[in-house]
Image (cartoon, rainbow, N blue to C red; front, side, top):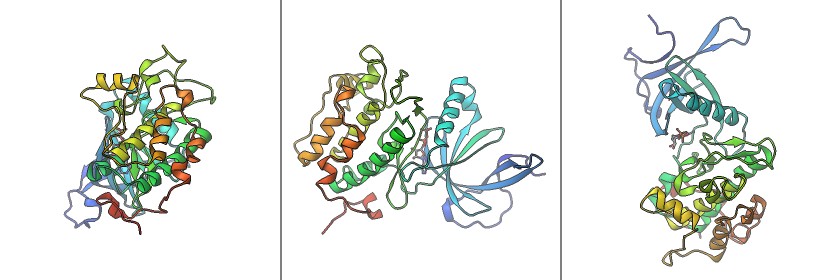
Length: 324
Ligand code: ADP
């Protein structure tokens, strides 16, 4: 008999195309009809593993009724036994589903069965900026400006239009679509403020990218806000231009110490414009209020006085582009 829900290995030996590296796993969704009576069944062909997160695995998948490709984030319910974990996923979905922007990875759909929760997402074909920097070591300045400008656009939308603080901006959460455009992803630590003046006190983030006021908790400040994302954007710009994060050290404790002392420098062997250094230094200021606003960032000479390509060829995933 046919399994009622969930994933099962296809047993028939029908030949599947190689597209998407399918392994024969079919995910079945039973969707309640809008009318209230009965279900419609939707099937998704699971493809290759795209990446792993703390709680989830993300696979390529094809909706079998439309042939459209997505990324599907699969969270085993075994990982959601604790109330905290469940609330986190619910919060992520609650925020993510309301967002729609060219440079924010689009949330498509949620469903669940007995074993798993499934989140369908816009597919980003070219992994994340993390893999890009691993392969390329560092980017040219026009590329850095190209990506940074898109990140600024995404953050203008999140901060100003949605009052959402991402709180985990890092290279691994900047996905790249097939045209090498940035899609900000993983809203697992995001929070939405009711008023722009509100503050948050929960400690979260990723060691290398975390802002000093988050490490300090509320000893020095009344909590943190949008400025924590500006700090992380500074860390991101430094990292793509220099090839390693500014405060990296042997362990988390010394990284935090370096962040609190704001100890970083621009290596002399890496050529960087004064505009690039100036913009990075302004974003990496210990006092949140000293950091530039997104509007100030977008008007910085790093963007307005330099060449920024209109698009990037896919070859930049492996080699530096040449402009003539
Ligand atoms: P977690 O919230 O558990 O950290 P993420 O959302 O960061 O999970 O996803 C884990 C990994 O899966 C990412 O680092 C990335 O490599 C990959 N991934 C996530 N979403 C997509 C997507 N929409 N398209 C392509 N790959 C993705």
